[in-house]
Image 1 (tube, rainbow, N blue to C red):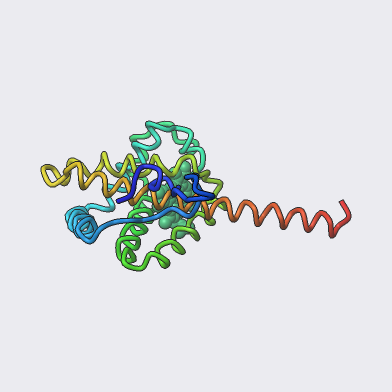
Image 2 (image 1 turned 90 degrees about the horizontal axis):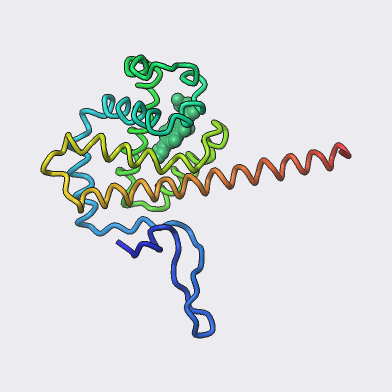
Length: 196
Ligand code: HEM
């Protein structure tokens, strides 16, 4: 795994003999051993994904109530306990967890994984779900799976999951911004076309 800066999507480049930070695409830089650990821990939580998805999102709404407003169906629900039995929340939690599953399945094909997360970011622009919230999902995932993995949850395993979620969030953010730009350009073109 790279240094903290490279995890955030930055690399050191040399220009005229000087070291400068150059922005580039986020990297998912896991060793074979780390991929094995990721797959092993996923196998242990796989059967609980429906339950985990609900736990994660109820916690997300508790810790960051502003996230609830993004969901048209839940924004007016004040009693978070009621959400625990909501079919819609279960469905959404499952969608997120299935995305994690797909990401793990594509871990050996970085370009396919990147495309998937990029498209997801674009769809989140349409859902009005801004990038500043994505990182919270990884944190909630980690606190929800910890009790399931018990002693198998080690600092190394935690680091790998953090890395995967940070990567997904960063690529989603790129997709979101790409879609935001595309929409702004489209609006600009239409304005010009209509002479406004
Ligand atoms: C790592 C972070 C996240 C992942 C992996 C993720 C994944 C997904 C997936 C797979 C879907 C299904 C639809 C599709 O494929 O386009 C979805 C839908 C959606 N997401 Fe996310 N999401 C994340 C974070 C968030 C956050 C933080 C919010 C809101 C604060 C959010 C709001 C929504 C909404 C409103 C929908 C559409 C309604 C629905 O499917 O229930 N997402 N998300």
